[in-house]
Image (tube, rainbow, N blue to C red):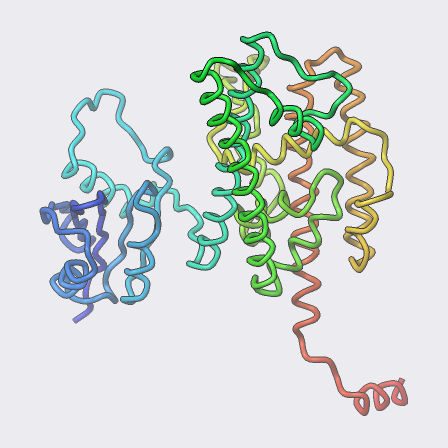
Length: 393
């Protein structure tokens, strides 16, 4: 007798998991199974209780608990999907929210096909993503530490010479020479300066760890990191961030899907018939880490197209197709920047638009690199076979 598929909704928390099941063979019945501890043994017992892994399809919302549960379920042979929480249907008049009701709603919507799954990286890829985000957090902490020092000295009437580079070697030497007669002020200055130096050392260690992680990446991912560096404004750290946040770029069918995923597309409310097109700020409903590095890179396209220095070195060894895409990006995005600025658009809005279009060239390079990797991995015909075909021709 054929078993019915069970659609299981899981409302996952740090300690407990609320469970609900929608059985396609019971006239649409959706029932709650209570709660279980969030540990591997309890999950294994649940799968046995429900009749084994072959008839189960499970889902839960992406959240602070990460993908550990997903990896555990996949290892146990269960088909599982992680759901985008912001795209779960919500009733306007529903004001009651409990773990039980959330699990039931997930099971019901999952059976109806109304949920949107997210891409789940493997453990190695997630480790790289955590490392890249740790470096981003360290950079943020360094910026805050530097601001504390600068504002502290400004309050006491001490300003660096304008000819010196901010936070360069000369500036740091000047900071170390600042002394105060009051013990409290001197202790404060020492603490603030120590934090700045600690943040700099922390960044160096994390960037060295990223370099090591890139060397240990699979060949496909490492080739993608190198290929993306052909673009102006996309150096190693930016390329690694893009790869860590996106994975395989070919999973997006077209560039517009990638742009929507980034949250850099404008919001729109065009209901009411023809001529009612109204667009607003960008949605910001996508990946904020990706959006940040895109905007930073987009600023470089305000300059005329050039190929020299570090950019030329980054393009060495890359295919002609990848270099052609990068050169086309320089012309297209610079002309776009000039056109929008000529219409008196705000520079920040213009750069955001440039960053959105830059994603299209990132997608093109990613797809091209994947094609080249696939071509290289295919077995080449033997020399004897090639000579035989040449004679036949």
